[in-house]
Figure 1: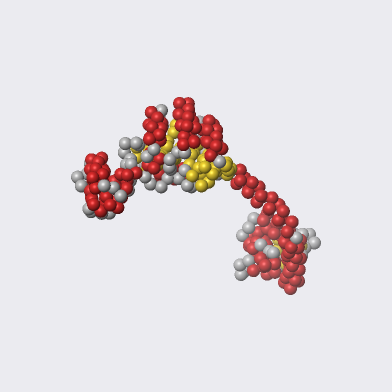
Figure 2: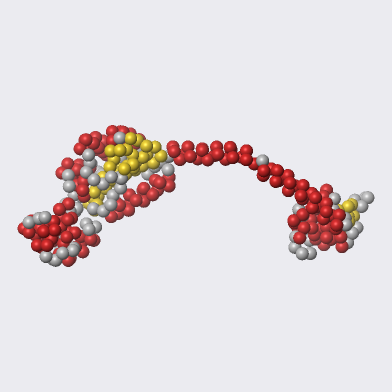
Amino acid sequence: MEGNALAVLGLSSQEEAVYRLLLRSPGVGLTVIAHVCGTSQDDAQTALARLRDLGVVRAATDRSTFSGVDPATAVDRLARLRIHGLQGEIRQVASSRHLIDTLTEDQQACQRAAISELQQVDGLDQVIACVDELSFFAREERLTTHPGPILTGAFDAVRTSDLKYLRRGLAMRTIVHADALDCRQVNRFTSELTEQGAQVRGTTGPLERMVIFDRRTALVATDPDGITRGALIVHQPGLLAHLLSLFEHRWSQGCTVPDELPTTAERHVLQVMARVDKDETGARELGMSLRTYRSHVAALLRRLDAPNRFQAALAARDRRWL
């Protein structure tokens, strides 16, 4: 037997084995068929029944023995049955355009679900109200970033909201950019947050604007350069996982505030110190007097506990000030 050569005509390998046996040994019974074909009598009986239905096997009058019909007749009959079946399948495929409607409904349902996982709020007032509402319903933790100065018009609302939920027992971790800490008002605010139990870290590196509530909902600015235009409320698990990973990465790179972070002027001096050798050149590049420049350099050497400018630059890089 050459494999399942009659599969193209719709016969299984077992059915083909039975038919070939009956061509070689016509008039044998069920027991012999099962034994020679290496199968059970039940499976042999099932194969015989289908072969008889297809018209390629005949049973004796007493139905105790079986024989295969002439191969030319069998192949012709099987081919006609197979072609008829294929024509039916072709008609079904040709008339399948009605499935577009049901598939489109599934697609639209998915799109509606995706839309519900992203909601937009417009304007600063709406964003502040949204943060307050989501903080109210948060039960465990809120993660916040402040990439730049907090707008004067929003500062009081942000401060009041943060302190209120801290006193209620909501855990808070906040990352504040050094640009924001240049503002005395923000510096005092971070001290208040720390006193009330919040964890606050500062950074001089890139910082995206976001607020994450209980690791289930996030608020991100629609404009990366500011929050005044509005924000997106994110519920989609994949996006949330990305935002959480980003926050944790920024958190791991931050340092305590406010004492450890350099001022904006000190950062500029550090950047120049790492590039130029002469104080006169550095002072001129920054538009400072030589005395002021050297005063900043001396203060940085003390803060970094460095014996010289080269060691100070290395220490600043270790602290991620550069």
